[in-house]
Image (cartoon, rainbow, N blue to C red; front, side, top):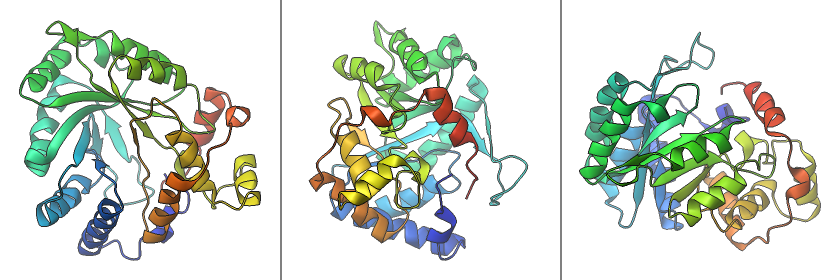
Length: 287
């Protein structure tokens, strides 16, 4: 759902996309990126990442993936359904072995994909017990949150205990200069020792040169690209342990990484109500 993403991929053949993914991972790694995040529902994402890992044998990397969605898009941008969410024990028992087979010993963090209060996954004893078992095998357990109720979801997750300790050691949530509602609870999570991954820091491409927001105009007037400034503002948050980028081209990656040398600005005035942000996001087309 990234604005203009379709124009970033020259060929959608499996071989071409696999080679492109490997090239992007290698460029990112050489530039200092050390965390790589995928999911069972990201098409062939796990296998593309595994190919790069096995070929290049990078050191010091953390690999995270997610379970709970099944990809149903059939490689089309406008199918009847792109993915189906199910947070059942059956889906966990189906997808955990698949992710393990794809990523092998490279896998570090296993996350519930888009946990919600409505799905009941944070109260499902069978699922939580299975995740606790996986944790005992050495896997780190996390969850991702989405939607206007992110703060509630994260607060609930922080109370889930197994084996006398918090079950979740990682939380992934959307935070950017437009959607700032999860900031306070992410600060609490970080203070409690939970690793925080920030997703969608560029608001699905809206905080890039392809977007049209007041923030973008200010960035351009200041002589910096919107994406670099937006990422710099996320990196400036003391609770942000990992910031995901999602660059699809070499040029985007170079621009994104300029955030490391870009001074952040006060972003409070750019925040919109969470409900407004997520309603606008829902209108974005799959690309």
